[in-house]
Amino acid sequence: MAAVIGVRGGVGASTIATSLAWQLGEKAHRSTALLDLDIHFGTGALALDLEPGRGLTDAIENPSRIDGLFIERAMVRANERLSVLSAEAPIHQPLMTDGTAFFQLQEEMRNAFESTVLDLPRHMLIQYPHMVHDAHVAVVVSELTLAATRDTIRILAWLKSNAPQTKVIVVANGVPSGGALEINRKDFEQSIERPVDIVVPHDGKLAAQAAKLGKPMAEVATGKMAAPFSALSSMVLSHATEEGAPSGKARSPAARSRWSIT
Ligand SMILES: Nc1ncnc2c1ncn2[C@@H]1O[C@H](COP(=O)(O)OP(=O)(O)O)[C@@H](O)[C@H]1O
Ligand SMILES: [Mg+2]
Image 1 (tube, protein in one colour):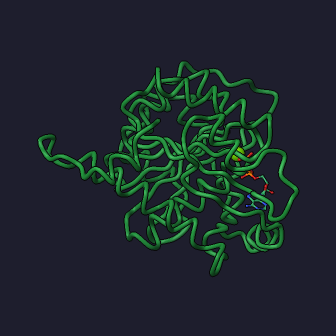
Image 2 (cartoon, rainbow, N blue to C red):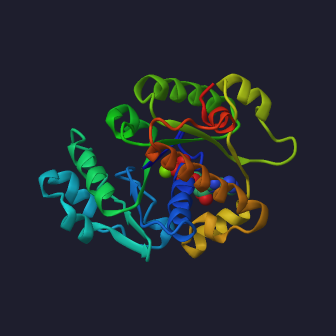
Image 3 (tube, rainbow, N blue to C red):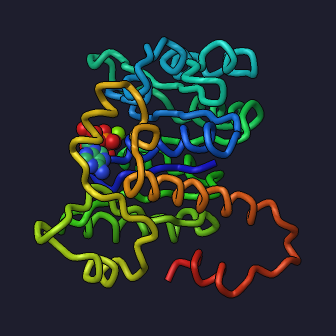
């Protein structure tokens, strides 16, 4: 299971989460669930041109009803290998849950699918910290701005103390070409005290095209823009495999240095 965490709103976390889930289904041939935890304003369904349905809101209202059959009925199918659970909960209703529903959903999705991708807005991380405990990988999505640098530092520190076993992948999204950077990659990496693993360039045209077609950015992307998405899914998968590897088996030094949080 991978949790995708945007360090700030608008950095492109949902774009990355949807693309990752699509990539795991379509390219890695794994049955995949996308759980969008932006309960009021989720875009998981919208981005794939689907109706969100009532599944997620029902689950929150009646967590005791969540079982395998519930999951089968509530998940909305995007394609043969990708199903989505997303909501557009009424905005006059504050989120009233102790998080049991999310925990149950995670559990059932783990049974029903080979991969689960959580789109986890940062306020949900604060509210329901247990959501990342079972994640093999936290994909931390940031951008190269000063505010996002500060927030990346804080979220990485949070992950280190709250989910030390979870591997971290840092994605710098929407990186403009040329001199329009608030902070360059080197200074960003120095500040967050670790390397950026994946850089997704800014491509407004591609983002608009994906939105219009109701397809994940990874599906619409070609060439230079497609590469970071496939690199991300390979990284996520290699973490999951490492997790399943026998404990006595040492990882190669190259892999260790690549994955370690410095
Ligand atoms: N690499 C990119 N280049 C250009 N636009 C992007 C890129 N990534 C995301 N976007 C756009 O940015 C906006 C916010 O993305 P979204 O994934 O909803 O952010 P978040 O979930 O972090 O709030 C969307 O309109 C999306 O199409
Ligand atoms: Mg989002």
